[in-house]
View (spheres, rainbow, N blue to C red):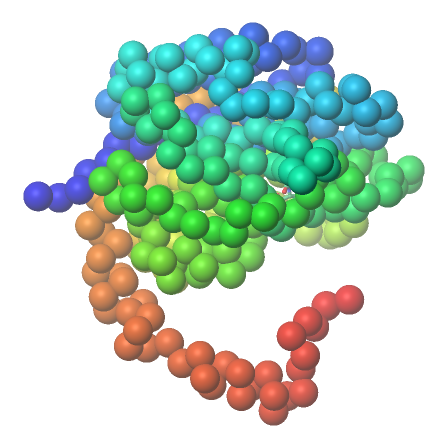
Length: 313
Ligand code: CDV
């Protein structure tokens, strides 16, 4: 019997800095209900989906910074999402800023969770590739302070047996790195879920601004194909606190083909029937890692060229 999972990608339009959690959660609930009406088993929300993307400006006051983070998950503000999941029998993926205490130290992570149809948390991932910088760039039109506000994720890239398949997560900038897909590909991942907040303008590389949408799909279509997995990616899109962000939320098949894509820059759901068995032919043939990967030779190439493990500055 084919393993068909109907997945909804729930794109969010901008969230105002002043918009409270209750209002954001009401928007997420409307998207969940829409996805459920379209027959979805699972709905995928963006990165840091509960607030405006505060990495885009300097927050000097610690209490104010803390207010952008979730101190527990679930918590009273997001509880309606968990209850709706149970009622509608639909799972969800949610990105949020996580504040926790580890060994007595305050830690901050850019986190996502996978929640089952019973409203129970199945798994958690903490973003590893944090873009940007820790010190503000006063000359820039907006900031990218993820390295200031977040610690590097410390949970690796596990995959979970869930929704009848093998599911993994990454967050935004992770999608540009082939290692992120491959670490999960080596564990047989069949469905990668992620969210993103991607400005249309890159102040450090403005010459690439016209390529933002292309690069967004390029990396995910390649990651899907090269690892024989579905990829579902939800954007926070539109003009948020003066920063214009790309949309193009999408669902990508293991063939690398786009099978669904959002067309607006606002709240929108698109749905696709994802046959998880499609992954198998890629994993057993063209990307059969056990038969065709040649790791021993990759090491030799690095040695011969004298290239160290890190080529960038
Ligand atoms: N939130 C992100 O990780 N955004 C980055 C931008 C800053 C390049 C991204 O890779 O989309």
